[in-house]
Amino acid sequence: MNSLVSFLRLLHTRRRLITAMAVREIRAQYVGSSLGLLWTLIHPLVMITVFWFVFSIGFKAKPLNDVPFVVWLTAGLAPWYIFSEIISGSTNTIVTHSHLIKKTIFSPQILPVIKILSSLVTHAIFLFVLLVLLIFQQMPLSLYYLQAGYYLFCMLMLALGISWALSALNVFVRDVVQLVTVLLQVGFWVTPIFWDIKMMPPKVQWFLKLNPVYYIIQGYRDSFISFQPFWSHLSYTVYYWLFTLGMLASGAYIFKKLKPQFPDVL
Image 1 (cartoon, rainbow, N blue to C red):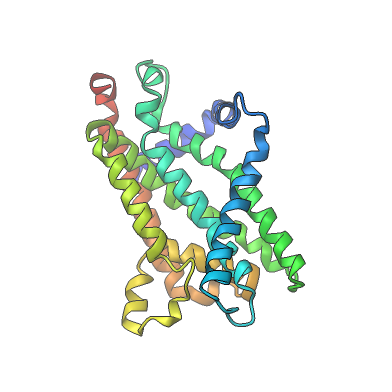
Image 2: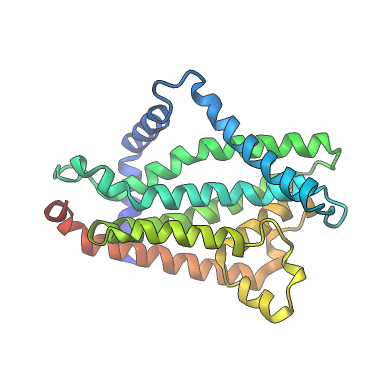
């Protein structure tokens, strides 16, 4: 826990550097591109359109609880997209920035945080598309939309802990980044993004809910569609935070233990 507290203090003192590097990373993604930041809008739109066409037109997916499938799908895709982007990008971030790691004044533990901040731009676009769909489908508006901020914070804390652990391990075992790619692909289909978890038997549902990302996916749907407060799932909320705090502490500890060896390995 001491490792986690020291990390959080470091993030506060380096906040200006973190912000500047996050802005530079966003700009670097579109260097030489004619459309620039418009790609942050194009990517989500293309993804949502393709999945909507395949499942709604191809597989004839029906509205779930009178909710248009495209809305239900987008509410699940929005948190998963930023989660997978953070994890996949952060895993290799130490290796990618090896030239900075060798500088004694640089703190490598801020690199996953920089990836988190840069990913928020795409997430904002996703939420914008979701709001447009909600208005287009004439669905009711609610102050529960603000609750999505809580679930976003939950997801960022989980992603930060995982990113610290994976980015440190990947320095020594480069297969970690390949393993993460496979696990994210499996997680994409195991997590109920395209399908309703209620279609599974109760015992299978209990097992699937052990996946902490399910808490986030369901939370976004509770915030934008069903308007359920987060405290209505009190036991699962407690489980999620116990898991996330454990992941944060573990990730900080792993990073702290391996960090002194980074320059030698890189």
